[in-house]
Amino acid sequence: MTVRTAEFTASILLILASLGLMWKSADGLSVGWIPGAGPGSGFWPFWLAVIMLLSSIATLVRWFLRATPQSRSDEAFVDRDTVQIVGLTVLALFFLLLASHYFGMYVSLMAFLLFYLRFIGGHSWTLSITLMVFIPTFVFFFFEYLMTIPLPKGITEPLFYPLYQFLY
Image (tube, rainbow, N blue to C red; front, side, top):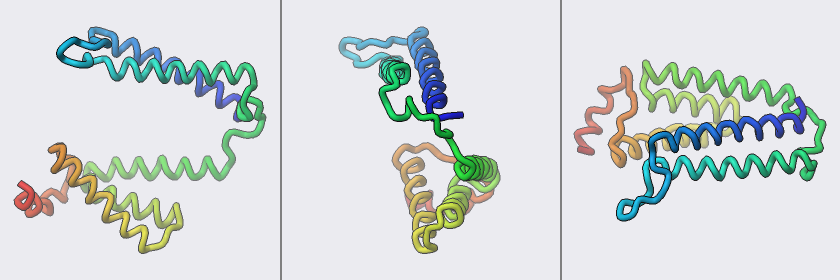
């Protein structure tokens, strides 16, 4: 697939997705402003989909006019190295989701970050371990404490009991 073909395909898919989101947002939901109450329940999804639709149409028009370097490019869209790294990333994300069922989101996220930062990204051990600890900690406090949305903890749930007593 060439860059030109990929740009055309992405434009068409995004136009279809935009139309689908607009239709679903307007299906029984208010897409306008309700006086005294604010935006209706379908307001933001509908109007963001309109913006996405207009952007995708603009990209498609520029593709037909060959107005951008991408719309004129016959180079390969992805090379072998890109396919390998994307495939490895998808596989790592699959194992993140699979592990989160058994070990919980936070432990699984830590393992994913360590693997991805150190072994895929080639970052230093110091940076990898720092981010491996900081990001799940931030995610925990954001979801559990600020938004009060518990994420799955699997078999690691008992490790969080002392923290719950401290927070709540």
